[in-house]
Image (tube, rainbow, N blue to C red; front, side, top):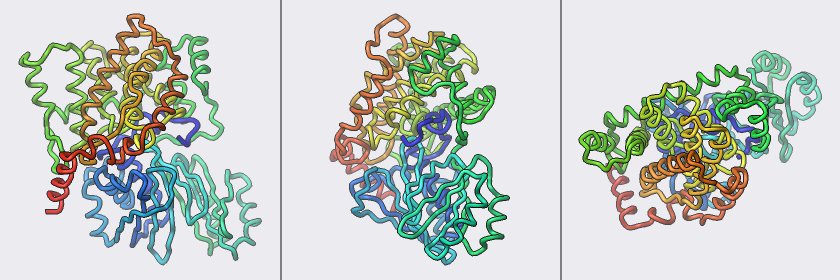
Length: 522
């Protein structure tokens, strides 16, 4: 991933969202928000171009890229309850949209090429969805630029004839963090900061009134801190720091996120409590019953609960409660309900299923749930830094596999395990997830995703109990992450969320997809 210092709330446990996929829907929405700001809200036409060899060529509609992108262009939040209708609302507002698939040679499978027109202007934006809702802008108007969405950005556009004002302009920016991005005679002056540069922009407009200036608002919940003094960076540093100060993994996570985002440690704890609340409501909504036309699987978790209560299922103890919570969460997600990508929407059932259901089974309080989620988030930070959460890059091991490793650490935290035990459990769970492919049936993030979420949760529970019982995980966590990254990148392109292999190309999968298309167009 692009960020060398991932945030638990930006990169790992979040976003809070609606939609089938975080890397498609939530990330596309964030790209749309940036595009909207780039055009100062004035948009008449949008052309979206995707590489024929990438993931978006086959998944743009089915996995929610469209509804996310159109929602962002409308200025909506990822939790907007109208998100499924964003395309209709955008077109009703007079905006014309077109999606083209072509040969662009993009190296990343989730590359969005936007051409935006409105207010007499035409702008081009190229951006990536990097996994779990994270994004990176690569260029604007063919000028290379980096925008991660975690800072306020002020962009000043200079063409060839305006370059003479550059020395004067830079005099106004002596106290601001800024850089020049240039290509073929065009320059974009990029001013970054944690705070809105409204006063600066007013001054600039007065001095250089003919220069186009755009303000790009942050799209991430936690802003980047300039020169953040993190308590540790690498895994070994964290381990040494934790042992030196006798800290559990959840405490290390709290200190890390506090420094990373400029938040008080109490704020970090309460923010995670809010996220736990969203997870619990998603479980409750799923069990209560969900309806949505454009999905493969109907409501099934309620029947599971009913049969479980009647004693008609095999007695699996806490695992049955975990399965119920996992499936309920996935059903909420697939019906456009609000869920937490943890670390992705495609794997959103694993962590809440493990931690919340187990906490209820054990009879422990909400504070213990928060601690478990924080511990899981710290494991995710290292996965985000070393590997990826994107199935398009690393297969489903990047999604459900990562969630399993995170959940194992959370479960050991609930059980009162030590720092080394929480990390050992994560290592063991990840080792058992290598090679998990991503082959969605009918290009929907429902099946075999549902079963893989349940499998990942069961794997997490097994790894947690084995670790607590003293089983040896053998391979250190940091070495596991290196291997995980290598294995994910070694998977064939057809088995990395492209709809080109595995179950995706079975006759039944194709028939289901065609039926859904006909139903939608009827």
